[in-house]
Image (tube, rainbow, N blue to C red):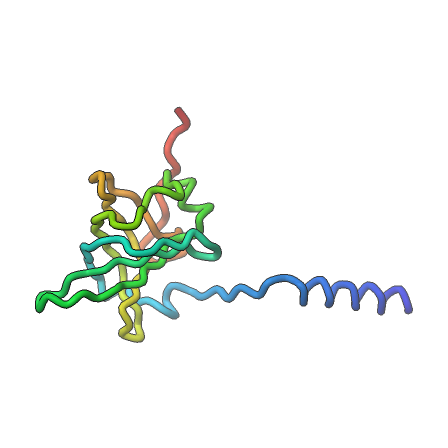
Length: 140
């Protein structure tokens, strides 16, 4: 009985020491029926789990600038889709399509990103309702 208590305590301590990373479903946060296309300059990139993010300054019709927070798939998924840490650089002019946040904030789940080079890259994880991620690029 003592061994069971020690094992349970060790398991609890191990679980408590692990970082708590919240994860959400696409449908809980984004509206697939509200697509958005944004064009602007990259102002920040976060290559972190569980989702990479980047921020784009978009010029509004009245001339004001708004910063959008765009969620990507995890870095691991992005790498399998051909991304690198330097695919997006501060100052790059890019175009992104995605689905806006349900709460009305300037946030969206990115689906496709057209990079400054003109290359279009897939951005979302396969867990979104629009469909499956394409197969990773063939090894060269």
